[in-house]
Image (cartoon, helix red, strand yellow):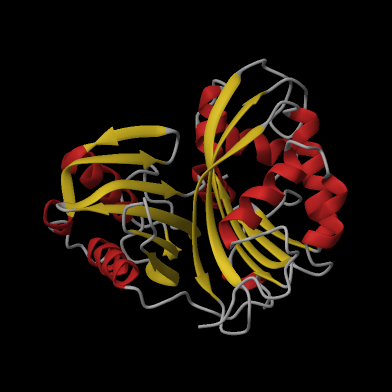
Length: 326
């Protein structure tokens, strides 16, 4: 077993300590310039909204967000990580964010709304530097708390960005680049179990939910939705899969962990790629080619999944549909 902290600053004692620590330094301590040495100069950052290359883009986006939400706090709920065979690690960092929409910016004129939403960032780090990243922010939760619905926000975003011909294109595999990370996670049984559950659900085995989820499961779902029990899980997953019944489901990264004072847990990064050709959570079938980027965390108990956290960006899905339908 290698030391995942080989080459890191000695002040960081573990992957969890590093990830939570630098996040606080950058965002809350306003040490944004540390991104010059914590983030590689040529690193790719993939979000449902698009692809950026290099730490300069991350710095610009960070400053724009802090201008619009100056009191943003990032509460690290969990860091689920696996070793990288090339040295270092991949961390799936789940964050609960609070912020006030105090100034005009990407989300339009200031509303003064107090927001709470989740983000998950999958970051590959080696020798004190993050060199590859996948990040999903619950944009639907943000815009709903501002008084929008995700579809309406996506339409407004297209217009503000110059219309269908000029607006920023959401992320798809066609624009992806090879970063420095080539791992796929680990073989821990909890990761394998959760991957099998999601694969079953996406293969229309909805009976996997009463079989594998605790009846008292707590669900944290896109749009800032908190729900409970089997019926709510079935409603969410059925609605998502029904909208894209012929889309290809892929698991890209799988981690399982068991750590002291924490439940057994798993982190899965996945995607759905294909046509919006079904009736489900995204309105009438449009035939649009859609890529859904997803990251899920699950915590297990004696009767199955006790807590599940699911992140997709509904506004990016709607943007792809609206670019097809006008």
